[in-house]
Amino acid sequence: MAFKHTLAAAFILFLGICGAISSARAEPFKIVGFGDSLMAGFGLRPDEGFTQKLEAALRAKGHDVTVANAGVSGDTSSGGLSRLDWSVPDGTQLVILELGANDMLRGVSPDITRKNLDAMLAKLKQRKIAVLLAGMRAAPNLGADYQNGFDAIFPKLAEKYGVPLYPFFLDGVAGESALQLDGLHPNARGVDLMVERILPAVEKAITAVQDNS
Image (cartoon, rainbow, N blue to C red; front, top):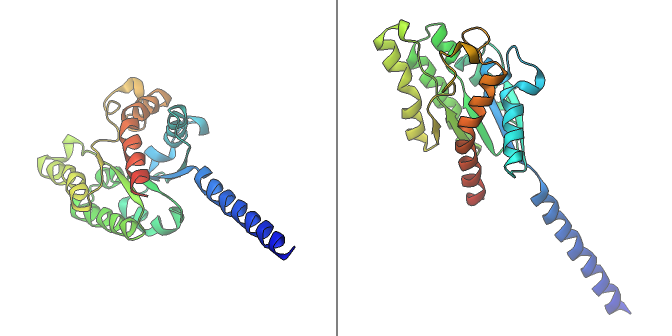
C-alpha cells in the first residue's frame, strides 16, 4: 500500500513538472519596441502604431509574440538611457532599439548620441537581452560632417556588440509625403510599409534568440 502511495505521488509530481514545462513553452516571445515618437505611434490611433502592427504581422506569420510599446514621443538618446532599466522589464527576449532621430533634429553631437546608445547596448547585453538596432539617418541640411558622423553611429555599434542592424527605420517612408503625417512621422500607410520592410529582420532576430536558448 505504501508503495502504491509513493508511486501515485511520483506520478502526480511528474505530471506537475510536465505541466510546468508545457506552460513555460506556451509563454509568448516577448519583444519591446524601445524608442521615440516613431515607435510610440505619434498622431495615430492605438491600433495603427508600429508595435501593434508588427505584433499582428508576426502573429499572422505564425509567431506567438507580444510586442510592447515603450516609445516616448520627443525622447532623445539621453532620455532613453535614463529610463531603459524600468522600461524594459525582466523576461524581455528582444528589444528593437530605435533612438537618435530627436538628437539629430536638435543638432546633438553624434558623439553624445553614440555614447548613450553604446551604454544602452551594454546594459541590455549585461541583462542577456537580444537587440535589433534600428538605424536612423541625418538630414542632409545639417552638413556633410554631421551627416557622416551621425550615420556612422549605428553600423559601428552593431559591429561592436554583434547585434543585427536594420539600417534605416524609416526606409521607404522618409521623403514620401503620401506616407507621412507631417513630414516627419509616418501615417497608417507609412507604418504598414515600415512593418513590411522590417519584418524579415525581426523574424531572423527571433529565430536567433530561440536557437540560442
